[in-house]
Length: 417
Image (cartoon, rainbow, N blue to C red; front, side, top):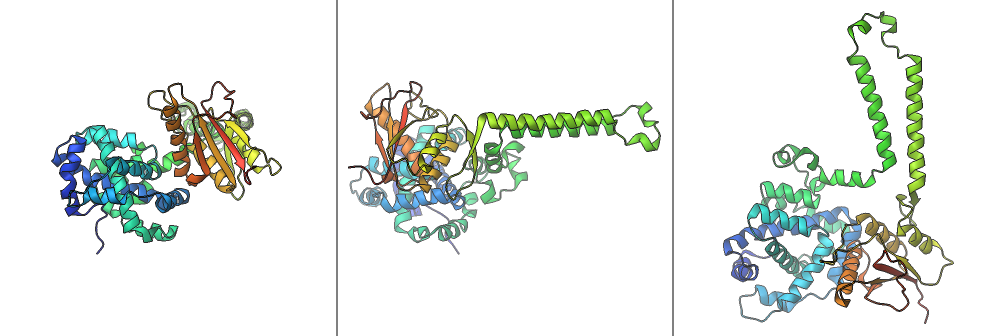
């Protein structure tokens, strides 16, 4: 019989319950209620990697290379009065979160603060702490599961039922939606409908589909729907006079109507093709799958640079697609497609060094924070951290594009001395 997935043992939870309550300024009862929910979220993040080889590689590299604050963690959960550095644990936990639940923190914090009656800041602090504590356990206890992707998948899929046991009821399905776990957990849609709209039941599938839908595809679908609606109207809602037509002519569509219908469909296809050729371009990385991207995307010029074997000089690119909130220094939009496709390209060209130069109107610290936000996103997609350099200023970069705060400098090895 397997044990329920956990970050800490029952004894360790009892030891730190009061300590965590003081840190979060919540009651011990509320903290005890949050413990299993945090564990469920961590398990959910781990389960998503079963379908994402790139992010699994990022987790493997992170655990392998990132120094774990062992002394601080053992001091924090131990029964002695040993000293510990909480900031060190929290920083390590933030790294784990950037890989397992990128861009999900705010949604989770809002959900739990609303449904469990606690502060959203408490949710985030506690969740970050638990991610740090689990990183230690993953290295000390569960590390054999990381030896390869198949072993990892088998190990954590055996624990997927623990997700339901750790957080039951409405929170379970809401968190499943946020983390896009429906395809992995095989949640009963009739149960989910009791807590959410039908459109949210298959969040993972619909999200993946929406990312692939383009304007040309949408126009084609609309055309098909209109044709179907016309056919239904014609066969179902005809007048009584039409019903008196002779049997032989009852099912016949007038020739001129059919011609107009064909003309409309042909024009819709032509319009779709024209829109696609005007706004999109199809790219493919070596050994990868073709993908459509906007012709104005920086990925077009990056793709051209990387596949050009004669281009040996460093090149800089303005990433004006990436915009930051001036208050929080976080990205205004998730830009998942940009990071995913860029990471695929960097994975295909492993000899390329990346330098991120980011500016902020506030100060150097703000610039560096923004740079590391971008680096963490790329690491979360599987790019090895040592390949990415972050700088707040660089004399070789002019920031000639006034609409951009982010420049990426790519250098193909061997580096010029």
